[in-house]
Image (tube, rainbow over all chains, first blue to last red; front, side, top):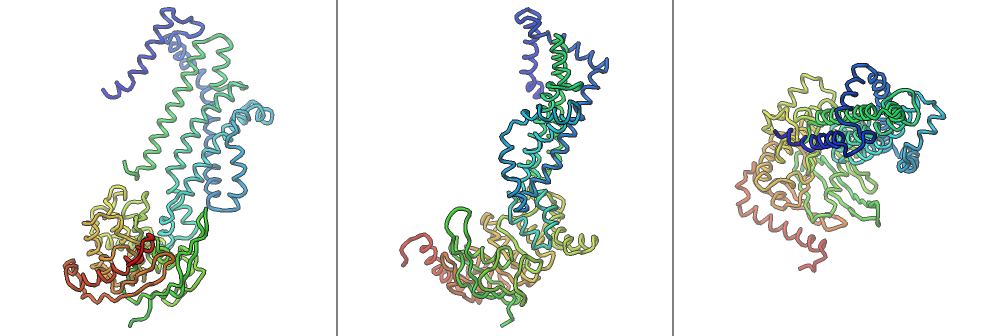
Length: 247
Length: 264
């Protein structure tokens, strides 16, 4: 009953959409009917085309995001742990942070071509900073009495980094990764729309240019569904990883 | 008199906040804590009593004077000096048992023995049955008992306590004070106990050191000479009331100075 209530606004919106195009309030060329879009979505799945494009997109987003998480956590924590590293990286981070990473897409395409590599690079660069900053802030904000307690219990520098600083910074790191996850979809779709031979972003722009609006909407649906599922799955993972926190 | 376990000689400390002028926190502080002795350190807030405790712990750099523990000068934190903080400082991602096991593991104790020792100390602080919950599920008093068990489990010669009951409600504080005395009676550590609660200091300590307002100096050190073991009923005895009044007068002078109020 509760969940039904929560999805009511969405259901109303979809009903209004179907009505608008069926009753001719909006021309079909601007807004194809929902039923038409769903039918085409079904065809994309049964004919298997979606898997090639979806697979390429997931590979790119997954690789770029995974790299940014790995490198970002290491850099962020090193920045908080070591003064020379912080001195070296802080200005760079300051300059790169406000730069819209999508502006890098054309450059990276020239350097790396229009295949997987340029997409992975864009996603990696765009997702890196949120992870670096959240890891840095998380590691910097660790309560000093936690570190002191560990020291007086006999822990050395390495143990403290691994066993105290990283777990204590984890809540903040995980919220940075959630931002990176959302960003990875933005950068994926925009880079694939600009130039690619496959991928969901490519599919959206290709179908749109071909005038197949139902197909274009179906491709957009796919991206939205993937993004939603990824975020929900991620939140469940975070809840599990932080199960020690108070409810 | 028994030989000194902790020897603090002419310690001074100045710290510079990230923004602003340097602050003189401690000035020429000397104090000793004997073997098995319980010394309380009281003073107005901001007088540097916690700073001094952190220096004995080796958490803050020592640039003026010297601090010896068991005859060795303090160079940094170490398992010979256990510490209990006001806000417990438990590892929130570890269960109660894992918190107590952590220090034992760092001491290189073998796993089966670790478990046994951890259980013994959890039983001692009456937390049997809570071994596998996370700290977030415990009350403040229970959290502090976990912290005490975690610290005592590795058997430090010296126990440093930084207003350990300051974050607890009055009833819980009273119970934990009694429990601490009972545990101390059995384990006999040298304790340096920071508090701003005069009655707590008188109730627990053999000697009470009163610090001045900033920069902190030792204003007076008084022997309590109350009988041991002490039950809570000691707090109604005329000697207890007298000692408390005496110390309260000293602390009050300093508190007034710290607040910029005219003395006397």
